Length: 335
Image (cartoon, rainbow, N blue to C red; front, side, top):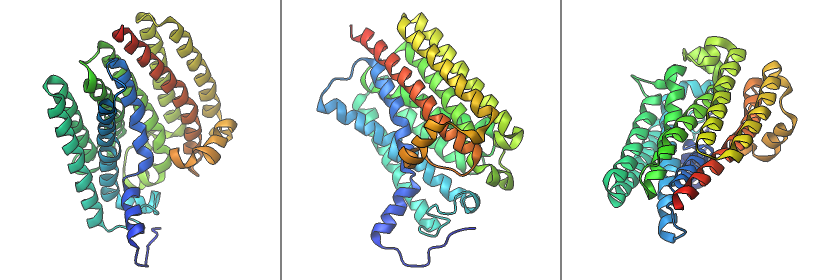
């Protein structure tokens, strides 16, 4: 059932609704990847100039690029959101469909404008990588939700699309902002792509009911919750293993042990959640409900609630290793 707003909204409420449709909690997701790409380059300087460049890149991929994809998604998924998320700005009536369209047009143009500026300012191949990345990201963000492609209709296209935006092009753009592309970035971007794929698979738990009614082929709809957990956990564990192997090849031997330790802890958590999602993870549950609940989301769907708890532990383990490895590689290039 949709929630309809009958009273006339104030300007403040309208602005809040326009920000909400951009889904601010998703903006921060791109920053660890951008930070990793910058650290691998080993070339960023602690100057106002370089900090402003990084801020521009974050605005381009975060509030504007990610916000565009969220705004477009809300517009085209209005009927699904009436079931899954009736309090969102459009189904609740706080924004009209035309206002949602204008919202997406504005952030699209701003993201593209920053991409063109950075492309011209950096110049050469590096500038083309940055501009090409945001153009590709905006296209993916549109066809993810919009017909006729509507990539989100099938998990075989939806998860890779999300992984491409969040975990792949961000690494290359951030690296290109300050240096030529480092060889390690190809591997790191690939690993982060697959990690994002695995996590978006689990995130679909929250919309399983609406997906079934709307004919969307999420993995949960196709193979059930147990199978979805298994597929995602296998991908995650393989990413940890390949990462440990790469760290060994790169001579980062202490990080190999850190990565394998993180993998072991992850497997323990995965086995527990696979056997009984309802039991959850007590420590992570406290974090989700009382700590970062507003940042990472909350859910009444048992499997999705379990995913949010697992996401806290997995992201800490993976991103911590990610950034340390990126920093160690960057130091080698600095030397």
